[in-house]
Length: 202
Image 1 (cartoon, rainbow, N blue to C red):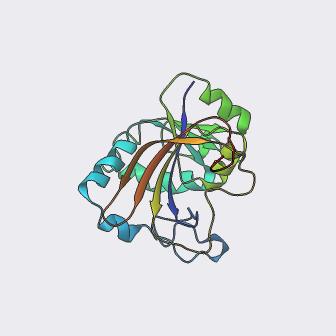
Image 2: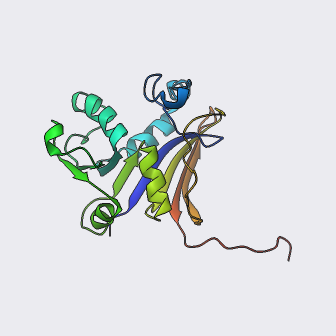
């Protein structure tokens, strides 16, 4: 079975919308697009190495909006993300088909059952970037094996959340972490069964 790994930039109050640029996603009047850029402008060498490691060659699972953004940018910027044009890009969309994209190695999926089939197939781990609505679906159906989060020291007060209504209860174990000099926390978690409860001090 292949692992589905969600990689996300997130604020302290859980917002993941439009971290990369002002025009990335302005839906619902979001006005803070590009909120993570100032922190990466000052990123240290260790953080840069970890980012490069996380952007290793792996198949991608994308929602429709993120796919549109990626398809318009990455084919001409593969030097910044080695292998991006060669890996398989699985795109979840009920309306798109292979005739609607010139980007190579695209496979369109229709529903959760299609996602489960590729998860149970042979191949690399599958990375999910952006794709807020798709992440909600994956969390609701317990299809997230790992979370690789970059947590920024900022609150935004509005915007699409990483965890929203429909997320099931689940336990995770921290597998790797790093704190950059400017306060960005890199934290990788893997799925670790059900939530356990108890009484502190008992």
